[in-house]
Image 1: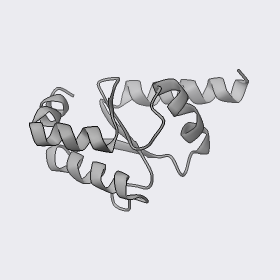
Image 2: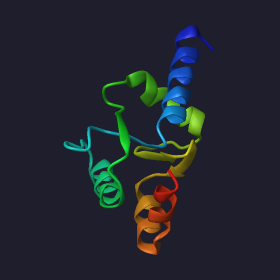
Image 3: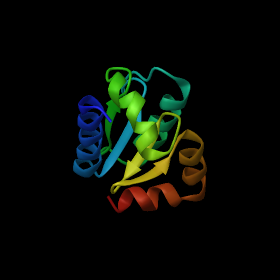
Length: 107
C-alpha cells in the first residue's frame, strides 16, 4: 500500500470517527449529483439536521478507497456512530420500518 492510500484511509477513518452521522455521496445535500444521493439525503433530512456529508466527486481518492475499506461498492454510504448502515436501498427500507430514525436518534 502506498503512502497516498494510507493517508486517504487515515483521512476516511478520521471523518467517520469525528462525525456521528456521515453520508458519503455524490454532490451535496443542497445539490445532489445522482438520484440515489438525492433520495438518501432527502430521507436523512426528514429525521436530522446533524448529518455531515462528503462529496466523493470532489475527492477521487476517497471515492476509490472507501469501497475497499467499507466492503460496500456503491455510493451513497451512510455511517452512524462509526458503523456503516448502507446505501440508498437500505436507507429507504429502514425509513419505512422506523428503524432509521431510531439509529439516527442515537447519534
